[in-house]
Length: 505
Image (cartoon, rainbow, N blue to C red; front, side, top):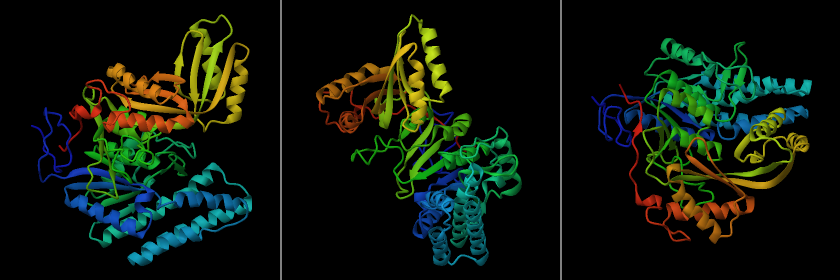
């Protein structure tokens, strides 16, 4: 029998039903809730978020864990403090003021104030050591930035208790977040799922909200590590998967995943749902979505992830889940990656496709260069390199190619990516190239992703904004600069393919 949902806003398809069944029930929906730094930037935002958590509980959700980032720009401030310490200057006054202001405004208990002040004193002592030694190792840097999350969870938990929500602050390693020793970008150990389940089973009351530090963990030697980009999201999905929860909620400062960057496209609209694969491609090509690594625990357990807006809690947000069949949308979203480099390589020797490509990629691997987008033929290959890659490594790789290929490196390029139904590629491209032709936008390379959900174009940086705006007009705003063929507009068919999700037992 299909289990009903406790929230009318959750329109997923039950595993045993053929249609959405948003019904009321008394059963709790077990979730993790993750809040980023902007959501808890100051005392006012902390108060808002804690009340939001209370409201979610009253709406039928049971947050087994609330994962918090550092408050506001605290992580950046800690990194800057590390740089200043290397110059002999130790000062965390601004960081101390931010947290002490929350303590005063909420009139938090003395033991909470003592804990936070002890952490800040420890942070200052660490910086004094950095100043004396004139060295800030990756291990010490991970320890330094951890103080932001460790302070924020204590404030959020204390405020939840004040408003009547039983809560306890927990450092991530105390609930089983174990990593390797790759400081700055560590990975969860294979045993983490088991250790999380064991820790929650033995240490955490299901009716008490565990407020957990995001982004950080312990290596096997008990040293603090950080999980890199998307680390707090990964903490949330790892806990959600280990406990086999009903949903992971990621609260951000926008109404879910949007059709384009709202800073550029004023009329960008929320997307009601995307598949795991679509979300991963969006994140990889520049959208502010969950990092692909953070998606993996949820994908493995088929747990839906909902992206919501902490500034606008009434918005339904975007659900990320497994999709059965293709989407009925022609284009789901448009994103871009700016300031990439385009490398065109043409073989000058009689190498077959296998020998040529093998030689090219061996050279790229030797210089630790990763490729974003690629298009190849038997004797030529074009590929893009991310702007973050070391310029000396890029130039050295180009130099090494010269004995067997002509290589041309072009900077100031951008990748425009459409998350689209690639089974209808001809329809998508018919509009794209007519739009580009009408606006004199030059495509220097095109590639269709192996994931079968994206089509990417390499353009000049200066043309990327016009390209995104004009394509958004066509696919989402019904004011295309060229005539649309019947059936091309994504707005003409609002039907959604069913999403498969794990629902309350």
